Amino acid sequence: MEKRKRGRQPLPRNIEEYVITAAMKNPGMKRLALAEKVEQELKEKGLKPPAQATMLKLFQKAPDKTEEDKPWSIGKSVEYHLSPEATSDLLLLWSWCLAAGLEFTIRDAKWACYLRDVGKHWGEPDKPIPSILYYWCQSYSNRERICEALAIDFETRDLDAEYSLAPSWEWHTAVYVGEMKKLRNDLIPETLPNSGIPKKVFTWGYSAGDVVEHSLGIDTYKYSRRLEKIGLTEEADKVYAYWLRFISKSEQWKTMDFEEHSRIAASLFNQVFNQADKIEKGTEKGWAWIPTDILTAYKINDGGGTK
Image (cartoon, rainbow, N blue to C red; front, side, top):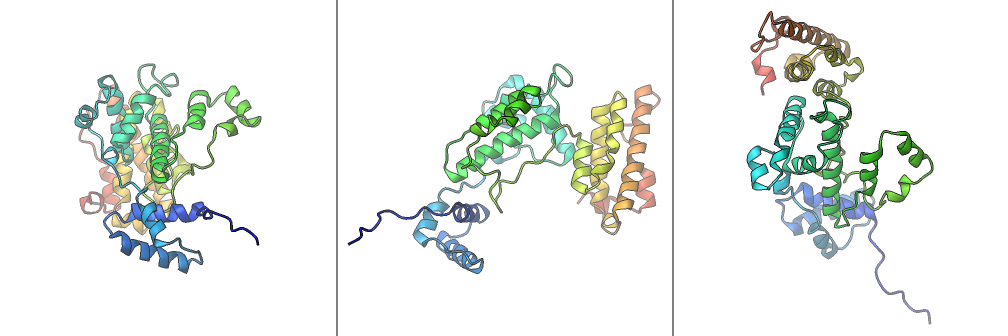
């Protein structure tokens, strides 16, 4: 008589991830009701749901957003004992995220304390490049949250190698010969589907204005690149990002096509560029400047942009 195999078949990873992310999306829902909901959803997708007891155990692996995933402030740096030496770099990154419309959390700030030297050799020697630093903060913080959610070892060797070596001849050679593959843990997915852990926003080398353009689908034009020619690059770029996002929230923007969006972005850029040039030459202070011509021409007012 053939012996029965002991033990259960492991749960497919896509099913496990689906159950965990359902718990992350519905933190306030009673767990038995959620298990029934997930069971029905999986059946509708033609998938075999695990037993309710299994789902209840998987729900426990799904952390809600923790205190570390709340917005950062200097007060939170004190509370979490982040290095006071990092405060100036954290403020630089926070202000860049604010202009680009991106979230900057305590968890991001924690990672920025570890990674804040990244990119300093590409820009000013005493200051990181915000877009590159934010990219790496996201890479590490997303990996940390994913490993927490799946209850697997927090491994970052592949990120460490890319962080320390790329982009370089050494890095590309190591990738080509397959050495980098040895550092990657295939159990760790890039993201968890339909969860609060999104794929990281790609900001490497982007300015705040570029990030906004990219999010609006007009990144091909790269108008803000010209701002690098003037002395107020950082400030002018943020002004451009703020105004472009403000205009894009208006009801009028929703009725326009890509070409019209592009013309507005180009006109806005030129106005910011000219204003920054005047400030650089000392002919105007410009602190209260607004793109009146654009707002008037397209009948855009505070009612659309500040909501």
